[in-house]
Image 1 (cartoon, each protein chain N blue to C red):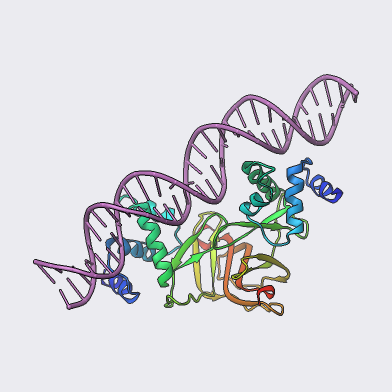
Image 2: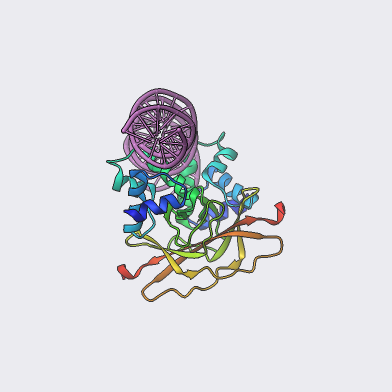
Length: 136
Length: 136
DNA sequence: ACTAACATGCAACTCTGTTGCAAGATATTT
DNA sequence: AAATATCTTGCAACAGAGTTGCATGTTAGT
């Protein structure tokens, strides 16, 4: 509870029950969540639009990051503190084709790539799809 | 012209002007295209729905593949022949944050990753965002 | 307790993508 | 070259995702 408030304060955000609940949902369910997932979990308490705006705010403040997917965007908590200025992620995302869950593999870093002359990379996003340990 | 027909035939598809035009658009513009891009290019001639269905068909037949993006799905030509049974891609996609174009770097393969025990990968998708040579 | 600044809910709207069905086009057979 | 079965298209209608404006409610700081 207090941890939630502190996280929000740390990012210059006011404490509201919606933000607490969204943040708490990200913490308890550990996988990446779509807007729809959150609406399913919290939709009775909050308006769709508020959840959209909460996600947008969290993104901008560096609390969550986008997770690419071939069937819709998802979001997951940033582990090391990302800031308003710059997100910094180089971990791998794994999506299970059986249970559908997408998870961050925080410990696995994306290997370096030698891009041709002239390319200036800033941001890496690797999604691996397959079968996860739970569904094995 | 004939090449288009042959590609379609080779994938057991009937020749229609819409399919020829969509295929031809992918060939001339070399970057990844969204449905919206195609609608912009061909929308006067064909219905939105037809373009959606054409993309779906091309996907299934292995003529194009999905390109993940943080702001909507795109599609690009498959270089080596993908089949109805299985797409096979391990190249890198690069999206320029200035011009917005996404391109396949066919020559660059996604580096191998050592996944933890229990993960069975089947499909890799690496998107690198940054500045491309043209915008440099 | 007061107030300025911010967050929420509601309504309306836009954009994206899908489905059913009747009409039209394609390839194949004769 | 005509007939036919099969596939493709356009239209209309719909479902879902995401956005914007505005009035009301809430937060944090004085």
